Image (cartoon, rainbow, N blue to C red; front, side, top):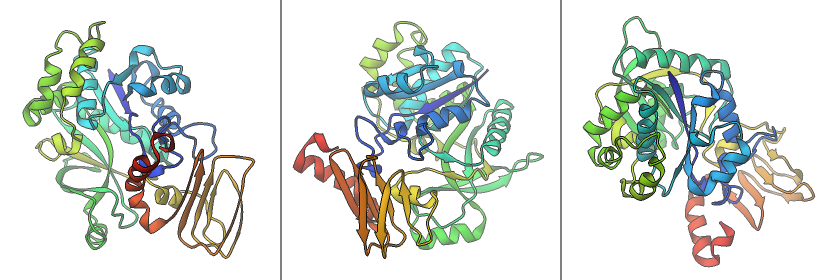
Length: 359
């Protein structure tokens, strides 16, 4: 059977001050739709995988948020990590859990906080991807057709095409966040695609890949053989999960394995990883400004995003160009969009100087 794993344990610090440690960005409704990014991701997947086979992997501190936002998810489908260890241990544990339920399972694994505008294309891509990995021992990633030379994304270079399977290619190389000049070369070549962090594989295929390419992680979870999908799984994970090395699935597996393929797609996709990404995917006024669910009176402002989390508050601004103005809770951020990559460091500085109440 087909399963889905939604990874939803990240902090989303680049969206501070909206995204906080107690309520990260995947639990926020950025578009005023009444649904959080996590809920929108869940809704999107339901067309391909039923609710009873959708698993959510998150940090233990977000258990109540998950249950509140997605009450239709069975309690046993919420896997709670006792520590943050990046995507490789998350995926290894989820694959182990699913393999115990169904050794022949195939899985799509995806983040909880991305934007997909072309949902029918997304559904088609997943169905074709499932068929592709179910036919052989393959690890598949979705490659997004780039529309600009983005420097904040990883890139996948397509290699040889797969015979009689349009849009599927062997992966030739991965490149993580190139500089602007190299990103322009990638865009012009037509051979490179954005790495969306959406993966498909059979449970057996990804577990074999861990044994081969990341044995340190594999050994942590191999020790629980026979315990998965039983009442003994939770205490085993609470004791052993923190021993797993912190590593991404890209570095641990995808950049090493030889059976990696890419399905090239156009999904109207954004990883919504930053205020700039939200700005680029939101409606603009005549001066290029974006207002996110707030009231703004601006004069001589251009290409600026305003985001306020209080309906009874107005913003009056003058002379801003290419800025982020974000006011949430007890913190106000005013920052040039060009410097938004520093927000993570800003959050660390705020924590060190003012304490945890502001992060």
